[in-house]
Length: 340
Ligand code: DAH
Image (cartoon, rainbow, N blue to C red; front, top):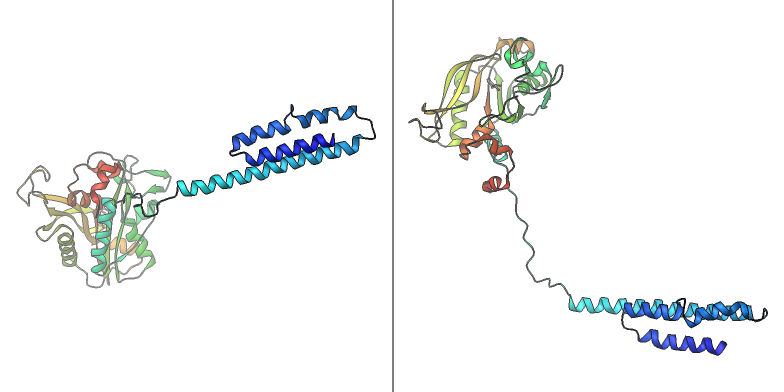
């Protein structure tokens, strides 16, 4: 029996060390250790041996079995290592090959215009202020001198989240927040998102405005007129004039609407400006003394001007975008055109 075990071990050693791949090695495993292997059959016969021979023989069987397992494991490691070494040589990465190009993104046209507007006003001495999109009625209406029965407060215009919690309909809310926090002199702009219940080619339920507020001693309408003119020429070009028309806003007195010369026909009249030669840009005016009074700013000492312009409208005119919805559809073919 002992010699039989020795001869099994010898042929296992010989054959296992000459195996070249994992598949053959698995077959070798079942040949030497599988149910039908010589070794396993000998184990099956262990019970028939005289009791005194069994322990010694059982021990030798196990030694042989473990030795074969060890041979198999070692050979497996050798084969895997050699496979890896070969693959390193045959499948080596060519680090001199050019990398895969990553398509470069582009800034959204609104972001581009937003940044340009900030740059212009910062260069004119303004600071940039921020306010929350989710507001209360006080900041969106009451403090802006807008009476409780004003149509703008209606559900059909304003998105209410709860009673007294709403999505701001205008960035004018930031005027109030700034005047609550800081004493004059004040000189800020505030770009941001606004929300109104409307949706068509020139209105989106979420849109962007930039607000401006200047409060100091001796501020008058000519300052407002000047700054608008400077801004419009900087953003649209020297040839584009601006004008103001009388209008009404609850929080300014007097109030005005701001127009710019039509960027398409330069005043001749075309389909873009509806034949008038001018395009509407936003609202403006001198801060109503009622607003100052509510915020405990001395309206005898201080005066101020404010205006609000549509950022999306500026982007559409600058980049000749015909439909506002294009701005918010996130069509990559559209957005790609704004690479700088
Ligand atoms: N908040 C106004 C709107 O959304 C625009 C506006 C008008 C802003 C006059 C102002 C202003 O600051 O003085 O229609």
